[in-house]
Length: 307
Image (tube, rainbow, N blue to C red):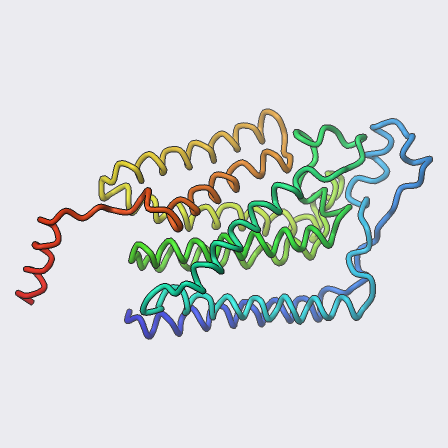
């Protein structure tokens, strides 16, 4: 498929994603849809088991202050999703990566790293357990819904634009990588609009949609990076081979911790931190840049002249 057709495919993809999202938000979600409970001082003195039984899945602030706030968010988030289509064209098919594009991608990568790190250590009722081993990013979202939306937007935007930047910098045109990254980074917009639900509410549309889209973001977001790393792995590039092994090892460690220790924002952040560090080093340093010998340059020129 030609570059022109692929440009159109990605534009149609993001237009369709934005349209489906706007319809879902407008007709199937409302600003005051989810019930919420704010614990009183007496509630805070309840034993841990009683507290969790009462508030699990219901302990959250109002998602929106008013219908106006809801609709402003719908408009902003829909326009942002449409903007992803523009980012795709500007990053993947720019004749040359401009300084503005480089600054934009570096800035949102740093902002994303800083915010998810800060967000992961926000205060939460101690009755739910230790912040490092028991409280997840979604649970924090119940108490800080505005911050949770910022978390989702920054995580999505930074991973998406910097994965594409990595592809463009290395002249990699993996269609599968772009598509899975697009779908993964779009899915988080559902997660941040549906409050987490407690264990007693697992088999509900609310819980399933929240968890499913969070997992899609995690796996497909990582897949976009892994696809590129495996491409470099096959080229026998030693630095990329080590990076591939390390990144996959971190994902495996995270899964082991989720099973043995439990889910928490800290554990969820492990692969995010490694992904941010990896993307920063690949995109904005020369550590992974391939050094061309004079012999390789001459051979490339000779090949071009023969053509």
